[in-house]
Amino acid sequence: MADDEPAARRGVRQLLAAFPDFSVVGECRNGAEVLTALEALKPDVVFLDVQMPGVNGFEVIRRRTPERMPAVVFLTAYDEFAIAAFEAQALDYLVKPVSEARFAKTITRLTRQLRAATPSSSDPRIVISTSRGATVLPVREIEWIEAADNYGRIWSGGRSHLVRESMNQLEDRLRDHGFVRAHRRALVPITGVRELKWTSAGDMVLVLGSGVTIEVSRRRRAAVAAAVRSQT
Image (cartoon, rainbow, N blue to C red; front, side, top):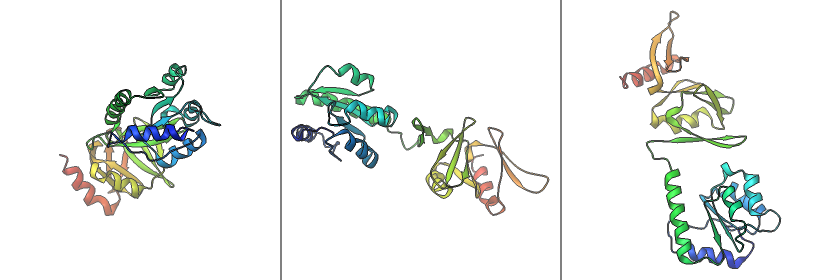
């Protein structure tokens, strides 16, 4: 939560005490502290005062960008900022002092949004940082992944996205979701393999649904072939 008044922060803690699914992971007195805390703590929700010393609540969102903000609930003594708050994509706008009933309605909205935003284990996703914020890519949409120095280059829909993870890290994350290592620099979802074949030079290759052809290293041929056969 972020408010330059200790009494206001204490009030939010007291209101939250009735909702055990929520806990306070950090408190901030100004916008600069909020920006640092958002990066370090990565909360699901931020209760944000509008008027704070230095960087105000709206400036926090502008600098962080709406795409990278958690759910935002503005908590302020002034009602004239409500329209601007919703234009900044805030989930709710509370005017102090807040009643328990009004706060409970906000928690209900927060709970509904957070549950909707949480992917099920059967629909895993990868968050990709971009210059404009972040892109959430469902794993089922990944065509294949190739090594790019210290990054992984994820191909999906004919476009590529860089993630700062090694191929070993990506393999560990995706192994249980049907991905196999074709060779040292390529990771492939078995469900995306259209054909496994041998070339005239005696090399095993995978032909993906997108038409991309990926060679399978000699030491991985048995494992890859077994994985492909398990899908037929």
